[in-house]
Every structure is written in C-alpha cells, then in structure tokens.
Image (cartoon, rainbow, N blue to C red; front, side):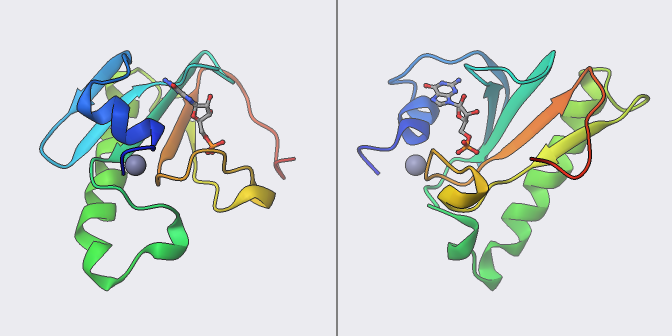
Length: 114
Ligand code: 5GP
Ligand code: ZN
C-alpha cells in the first residue's frame, strides 16, 4: 500500500532501527517507546487489521509469533517476561493500519490494560 507508513518502513523508504528481517517479516524499534524495550514486528505484506486475517494467513501469523518469542529471548526479556500487544481498530488503540505486534519489556506491566 503506497500510503502505509509500515509498508514504507519495510521497503526502506522511511528509515527505521531494524532488529530482525526475513523474507516475510520485519522488526524494528518503535519511534515512541512505552517501555525500555518496545519493538514492532510486522508482516512485510500489507494486511490492514486483525479483522482481515483469513485461514491462509495462519502460517504467516504463526511465524510472526515465533519470531516475537525469539526476538524477546535475544533482547534478554525471556527471564523476567514481556508483553505482546496487537491493537485492532481505533477503540483498541490501533493508529497504523498495517498489522503489527508490539513487543514490550524491561519494566512491570499492569493488568488489565487501560
Ligand atoms: P498502534 O497504535 O497502531 O497499535 O501502534 C503503532 C505504533 O507505531 C505506535 O506505537 C507508534 O509509536 C509507532 N510508529 C508510528 N509511526 C512510526 C514510524 O514512523 N516509525 C516507527 N519506528 N514507529 C512508528
Ligand atoms: Zn502496509
């Protein structure tokens, strides 16, 4: 999608602090970190929201979650714990309409979230 911020980041048209990349996935530092570690992990393919997932996206989204787990370990978060967040639509806090997981760690988190 030509006007999507995360598609532009994936293509390198907008600079980002990359932490992981493969053929299907891209992970980078959030520009407005909400925790000492705050990364975003996205599929390279443009999918607007979690509402748009279909059965054929299962393997991709599974790999996204496994990558998040591995990145958390590499970032030293697996011992104390971390949080993965995916917001769907505005009332849940989604502001960029390209599916992404937030990977947050390095501090304690409250539950329930705000
Ligand atoms: P959402 O609010 O959709 O769940 O999450 C979008 C996230 O993208 C926010 O945490 C925001 O800080 C981050 N973000 C928005 N624009 C940019 C950008 O240009 N670069 C980076 N690295 N992060 C961005
Ligand atoms: Zn996109």
